[in-house]
Each structure stands twice: as C-alpha cells, then as structure tokens.
Image 1 (cartoon, one colour):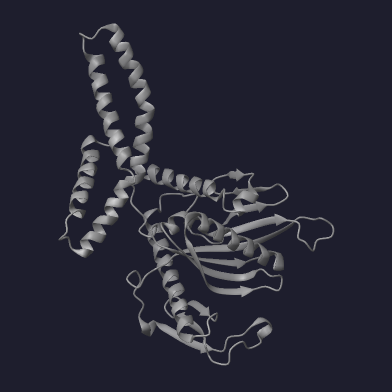
Image 2 (tube, one colour):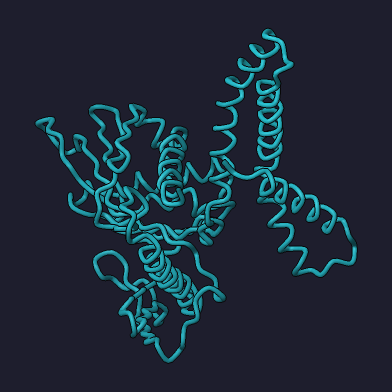
Length: 357
C-alpha cells in the first residue's frame, strides 16, 4: 500500500503548483515547467483524493471492529463496508502506482514513423500503404497532424518506403509499441486461384528528437548531394538537391530527395538522423535498466514479428500479448486501434509494476 503521507504530499504539491501558477511575477521557464507538472498531476489528482478517502474510511472501519463497545449490528455493517472498499482501494492503488512509475522521457514527444515493404513484392508495398493510411486515420481520431518526410512509391501504387512525422499530445507513448515486423495474409487482386498470400512490412517508430536531446558534431557527418531521380531512374530535378547524410561513428545513413530545395532535404535528413541516434541511445539505456526483466513488449527489436493482419478471417492478432481482435476493418479504419494500443500499454505497465515489487 502507498503511504498516506506520500499521497498527501502529492496533493500538497498540486495545490502549491496551482498557487504558483496564479502569480503574475513567475519566471517564464518556471511557469512552463510548473504547468507541465501541474497538468501531469491533474490527470490523477481526483483518483489520489479518492484513494486517501478510502484509506481513512478503512482505518475508521477497523477501529469500529476493534472497539469492544460497538454492538454486533454496527460491526456487521462495518465488515460489509470494509469488503466493499477493498476493491476500490486496489483499483486506486494500481492507478496511482502506474502514475508513480519512472516516466519514459520520450513519451511526450512527437514521433517519426518509418514503414518499409518487406517480403511479398508488390503486395508488401500495398500493405505498407494500408498501414500508412491506418496511422493517418488514427492520427485524425486523436487530433494529431501527419507530415510526410520521404516516400518511395511502388509500381502497384503502394509504398516501398514512407517516412512521416506525427505531431500531437503524447504521440510516442501511444505508438512506440508499433515497432516491428507486421504480417498480412490475404488474397491479392492478381491471384486467380483464390490462394492466400503472406506479405510483410517493417514499422519503426522513433521519438522525434530535438537539438537539445542529441548533440551531433558536424565533424562526424559526411554530407553528399546528388541529383534526385524519379521512377525508373529518370531525372526529376536539374540541380543537386538530394541529400545523403552519413553519421560516421555509427554508420547511420539518411537520404532525402523529396524536396526541390537542398536546404529542406538536409533539414529533413537531420531530423530523421537525430531521431535515429536518440532512439538507439534510448534503447541502449532501457536494456541496461532492464537486464533482469524479460519483457514481452517494448524490446524495440524491429526484426521481431509482432502482429498479423488476416483478411480472410477478419482478424488482427498481436503475438506479444496474445490478443486477437476480430475487428480488422475497424482496426484499419483507426476506430478499434486504441483497444490494442491500450492493451499493450497496460501489459507494459504491469511488467514495470512487477519490477518495483
């Protein structure tokens, strides 16, 4: 059980922040910092207050049961009430424990999503397009904004590769468990025998890093410029506007040619490079912190097959948590995506809670 003193200290902190934010002479940086903390505690404050009330009620009921002067009827009522509040206490305790878990500093960041067609040829590129459309719909439902950074189209009208940013509140925390190999099973339009084909696409979700998150030494970069090419290798630009940036220490390479401006292509490439380096360091630290924990999710291993989209059966199955939803159409439309996302979040939180027991 979380101590009453701990809970009351959170309430007191919330009240202090509220008082601080009402002052007119507060420093701007302090205001931003306090606003963020106030908003964070605000999401759980009513639960904490209810938890405090339950703890106090529980103590009062125990006193009645221990009081030799209490009559039998009152004791029976106290025992009944005590049983009733136990479930509430457990519910509040779990929610508060989750709130008190160490935060992933990347959770509040925007995300860069990279989708690449895998095995399955043109059908895999169509699946990559389906995934992009799904993330667009999920973003629309959540009030997030999508911006394409780089795209390589296939002959079938799908994507060999597409890279895009998703901007909004807590984007990375909602999408970080999407990284991995996603498989699709369906009958392609070109299949005359009605046979089910299996294709795959790889998804990588990176926290969008800012310059303050990752320090990149210009001397560690090799920047090449070249003429961008269209389908079939034809030139689509008469100037060397395409940019390829290589981070020499890590060997990470990013190439962008979508914009006509070399400056814009370089800026996009740097955004992706910075986020890839930030993600690599974030995962390294995460592995160090959880060497003893065998997590089913959140490993960040992009070679891991995490999910199957089965069209003939109308289902989507996540293999990490053994959850199958027979809502494939609604899932791809974004409507039922949250059910899977929330289940992954809950499983991750349960694993973290196991670590702190």
